[in-house]
Image 1: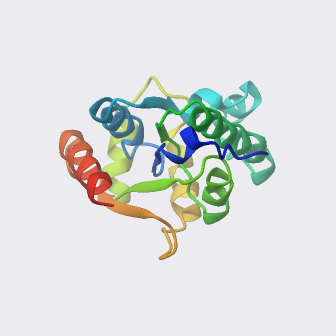
Image 2: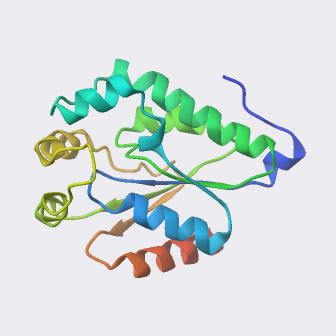
Image 3: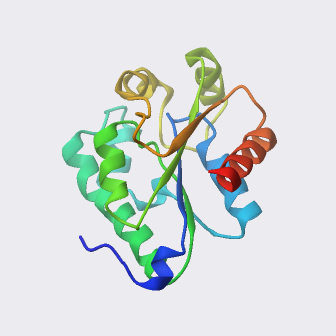
Length: 177
């Protein structure tokens, strides 16, 4: 994979709003992108049909399943950076190794981890019918979470806050980070 290093790319910003399914990452990422006037994408839209079918059936993805998907996401951010466009991406990015792949795309990536009690997230998933990710996979996602490490540029926000407040806090953090 190549990283775009032109002058336009150096002036772009790339933010990944991360967390388990049901944490609100798509809603928050979309709101942040709108507030900043940048390109939004949902990583779910990049999944190949085989991954979607597997998750719909209640089978967790393996790292082999995720590899090409993560590479595609990193390449998309790099492509946007090369065009001088900043991005906000909603993506689970639960493990450090996944975030490392994403960081190999654009010149830099910042992370906003939406985290909170499992019961709050489970309640949200139970009330959701339009998404392919079943509630049964929540436990495997929670078990997979590797918190942001000190050398990762990121912030952790509490999912119990309302989406508007999460968007506001993310934008405030990005303006001061």
